[in-house]
Image (cartoon, rainbow, N blue to C red; front, side, top):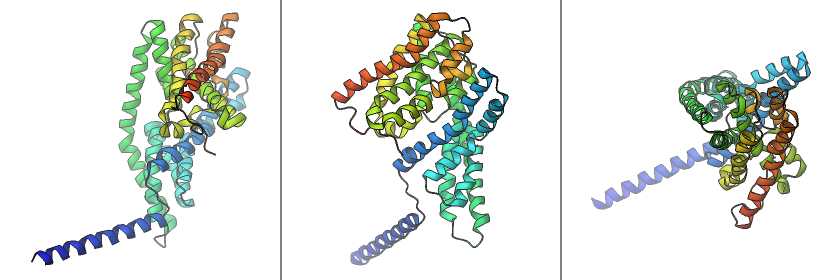
Length: 358
């Protein structure tokens, strides 16, 4: 009896192993690789490009249009910003090596995800929708209907489910920022600068947060300091790995390009964050820098942050210009380079840790 039961168990285990092997082969054939690297390094890295080629470039053109009085730039900016969700969806699906039907269907998923939960909502919805779309792709004779339907229905459903939770999280983060703005200027400068800088590098829209909160005055100046510290800081400390292309991409583009590397080694986030905690109170208490909401969360991206300071302080004088130079450019570069040198010497940051994905 014991031998019979043991034999049956062996047969069942062998059957499970074969089933698992067949399922694994099926996933491999569908080019589905369920791993943290694919979702949080490859997909998030591509997402940074999607965000820059829509929302961020749109904000840059909007600022230029308003500052230079060019209506065409303002209209162009609206189109670019309206495409944010679609750009996010397509960029994430592309990183997952999605076939054409899934790739193009992800535009609608990204739109829904971004509308209901911002960039994070688009990220979650597109990953699930793209992987499900890849599962059914090529399995029926009516692919052109089934694949987009599965992709869009699943993606929008996930966006509707995840959206409220993501929105609640963003509201809580905004409340934390607003609480900090009521504190003493030095403390406020440290907290707001650090939090907004972190938000800029994360796959969420720091600009959208500042606009949502209508963040202005010296609190917006602190936010600008934090965003500049992240962008200029990462650009300078990674110059050895990424040279001039990386310097421009991060310094005038977005520090979110470093998110895949931050996931692999979170310690690389320490230098620019420490720098932001120094430049923030300098911005608020020494120079009294102010900004407008749209400029507060952009940092040096397209120089929107510095332009915003100029708009908010039309009679700022020499003190304002010195403050912009030090807080937005010089101090972030010097401080981040100093902190990163220390971390490299103790082995917390190693060669290649800051190399951008191509």
